[in-house]
Amino acid sequence: MNNKNLLNKKTDNLLSNKLDWNIIQAEMKNKLGMDIYESWLRKIEFVEELKNYVLLSVSTRFIRDWITSRYLDQILQIIKKYKKDINRIELRISEKKEKDINQTSNANINLLNKNDNVSFIKDSYLKYNRIDPNKKFTNFIIGSSNKLAFEASKKVSEKISYYNPLYIYGGVGMGKTHLLNAIGLSLKEKNKVMFISAERFMYQFVKSIKTNDMVKFKEYFRNTDILLIDDIQFMNGKEAMQEEFFHTFNALLDKGSQVILSADRPPNKLSRIQERIKSRFAGGLVVDIQKPDYELRNKIVKNKIDELNVFYSNHVNISDEIQKLISLEIKTSIRELVGAINRIVSFSRIYNKVPSISEVKVILKDLLNLSENKVTIDLIQSLVCKFFKISKNEMLSSRRSRYLVRPRQTAIYLAKILTSKSLPEIGREFSNRDHTTIIHSVRTIEKLKENDTELGANIDNLKNQILYNKENEV
Image (tube, rainbow, N blue to C red):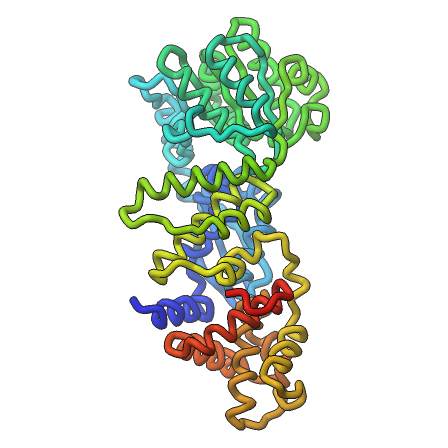
């Protein structure tokens, strides 16, 4: 598929009257993370799209209430990104599925992988992620911000109960799950390891109560050598569940099992969790992972590029200048650093070219240290008018002289790619032009750019002026 068809297909998808649930699922996975998606959001089924809302279904009341209280607003925002007129979601319970689940729950809850020491409660519609064989100590990139957490994790994997519990906390995408995974990998050959997220623990607890399987629940979670629980900050809610967790936690410590926990905050900052539980967390070793400094970010970028070069036969060409830009500007999390590299590689493979610095800045505009709010349609119009030496009144007029049409189309194209405004919103800013005119302008510029190198260079120049107040950086 050539570039023109690819761009047109993407535009057609966004403008299609029919909501593509596969796209929404991919977006949920990207925005909310694989763990949350696999635990809760994968279960959502698309039923019907009506005039101004969508009808979705899940298998149980518990899942419906959980999603409604935690993720429904974010799901609605994702849907609105593709269908602006959707203003609510109705989440129903699929009666057939709930009946099927209740009939099979007793049989499925007993399924354990007998050939693997890593144990998970394997239930037909709640699939637990296994330990990732790629997240090891050997490929964890160490810097001053995470060295203490790394060393503590290594110590625990060498000598069980040396630090018990081990509590690792830090922001999203800092490597906490990687460390828990690495501990599990190193211990699973000689120990019974259980690796679970706090949300899944809560889910399984509630489900066990509903199916009268609490005895089996206790056996599963107390008959283990190593218990790793990710995102413990979500371990909140009903007193009965916290009570059971407290007793499970104590039983494991008493028999010498190792408990490792991760969270996004220190124990004393956990909300809606019993004080005695927080006290037990704080009674072990508490270590934090801080934001990576430039040196660590740069090491991670280079390491990721080396990994990609192993997988792709054609080398991944990301210049030192681009690597430096990414390492300097993306400071929030390691996950965003890796995501930035993946975007650039995807661009290179789709368009069969190495992106320029200007193109990289556009590809990563939501990740770089720039405020999108600074880019307004008014600013775009002003800079385009100055560049083409026309007045704003001429640009916004109904005149169709060639010397006015091309600048007008260029400004519309830049408004589409550099702002989050919808097509009707852009049309209103250009003297209430119809959204079909906006689409035509965008497609015209995309087509012309393929063959007109001078126009492409001019647009790159304008992008830099708009985003970074710099000229002639291509």
